[in-house]
Image (spheres, helix red, strand yellow):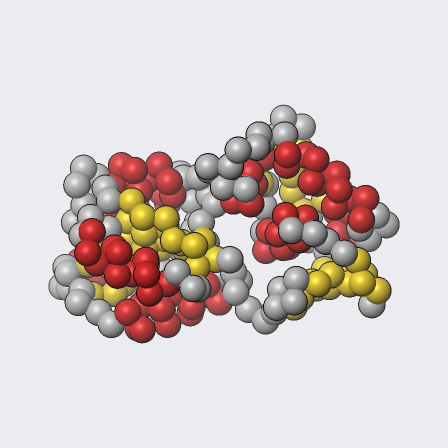
Length: 224
């Protein structure tokens, strides 16, 4: 499921957005700029919904720091600051979209979907990589037309790699994204599941191009 970080200090609005999106995405709520920056830097989110007027570090400062640190996660600014100068400032800092309060929740969702499609996080239900084909609507995997059973986190792991080709994925980031911050297991589970996937997809383009970066994590090189 899509993961969204919601940085909004208005608890009522935050809860409304959370409830509206809960069937579409996993939403993490934080209520100040410093915590928002900390969460956003983890790299596990597909999209950030960012208020501007926040306790501590304001939204513009959060956005500036994220972009300076190379975090490319799409950011949708949500704010009552509607002047052209404010909007221009947001886009200059690296915002991907700007929604002025008050807004309709339906419009927010449409803008979210547009950004996710633009960034490749949601598209058609089929992901193809060389001889491997993944159907996210049925959680099925095929290699050269033959079904390969990927169970639970194995499937999620393969999808995550396919959605982040040519990107270095630290083991900590993979763990946080697939298993979650509150998981009872340890980070070593990432290596266990990568090994499982490699065995099940042995001989495929996916395994050939999935490289281990010692003491760091993994990278799936683009398919030839």
